[in-house]
Image (cartoon, rainbow, N blue to C red; front, side, top):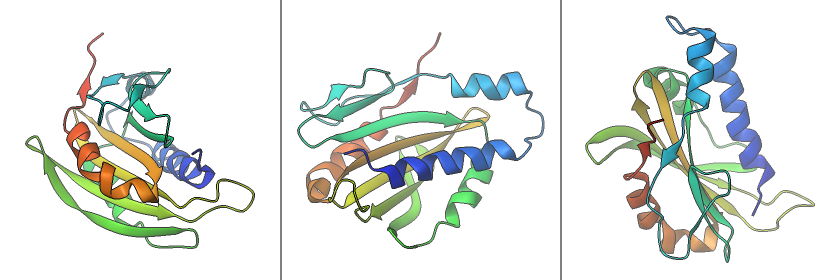
Amino acid sequence: MKHPVHSCWLCGIALLWCAQPLPAQSDADMADVFNWKFEMAAPDSFFVPLEEGSGWEEPATTAKVVCMAMPAPFERTVQDLEALQTEEGQTVLEKHTLELEGVQGMLFLLEFSPVAGNDPEIAYSLMFVRPLQNATLIINAQYPKPEHERLYAKLLAAFATVRKKEE
């Protein structure tokens, strides 16, 4: 399930953050954040590691879960994301604070309608955003709507296991 709306949405957020200057961060520091790698437990035994790392996929359903860091302070990221609203092709189902493994963050659940000419399936995007050092960690899962009941709790449990790999 490669949902172009979801991919464009994440890229748009990344561009928004990068377009605004961040105090006390050099270009090198910002670029370094994009290169951080993460590890996390698989949501269940049907998931296999993604080739590019920092995530998992379930081949039978095409569900994916990935981690990435954004070189923006958590507070600013939350401000930007709290503005998310339901719009054509995207419905905000959940948007609230959540604590996972002692770390406070924001949880978002979005529903994406099928896009003409692409996958006819309704897709869900579950995203947990939390602070990490001087940046923001984004953990995002994308999966078909019929898999929601089976995957929701498993994905949150996997989100709680994310750790930055030390290089």
